[in-house]
Image 1 (cartoon, helix red, strand yellow):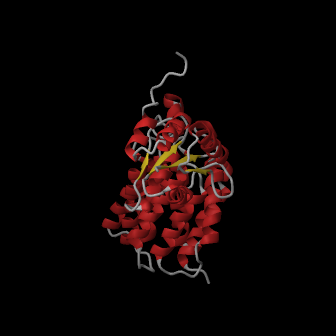
Image 2 (cartoon, chains in turn blue, purple):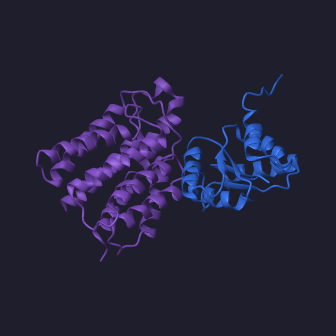
Image 3 (cartoon, one colour):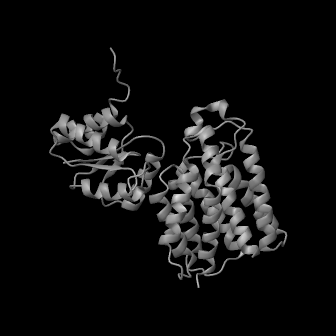
Length: 129
Length: 206
């Protein structure tokens, strides 16, 4: 099953999105929160993200969802350190909606490509119809 | 006795710490008011984690980069982290600095920032201080100037670069949300990059 990593500047946001996605998707897949710095400060830490990717990986790849700005840069660095042993990719999607969509798709046993596709498909969705 | 590179890092940390509030204030105007705090936290961690006796510049600078990646928190973490790690690759195995090596390290650091930030000169970033500094440094060295003279020229060019960032609008980072309204404010990243160069210059001067 595809694993998910939730990257946020805030530990609480990362943990909250993880909990919400788990709840909505009733995911048995692995969602790992990588928010904030080691001491709990606001920020992103490439090494924490790297650890989270390794923890989330069950052999079918890992989709990484990020919040703002430098979260992407830190995730990119984590991927460079990870090398090619683990299939992991950064998803270009809003964090909350993307994480829920990805978790639902992952819990169905879909491939990494399909999980990323499901998350990115919510990008343009309107909230008020 | 700590190595020369550790002593130089101590200088940089002191300069960043002394200017913590100033950097944060600059960032309050066009960003999210955390640059000074983030950088001071990162360099405090650098002094703790980098071994004081390690002579290999490559080993030391890699540790600096890795520490900044994990402790700065804002965008300057991945950017400066990458810069120091790229400089580390060039400096691997070296235990003494020369003008040519410094020029190469600065070039590698700049290339790393450009790649990581997907940024170019003229976007109101640290590159607007670092690229002119590197150009001025290389020009002086080519003319046979000493390391210190070349560093003086680099610092002067970096200062001019910081002044230039006041005149342009940001297109990268949080400041880009402000667009034209960012004109008139100097870039915090260009400012911290200049502080680093000045600290190195002051250390080399003795």
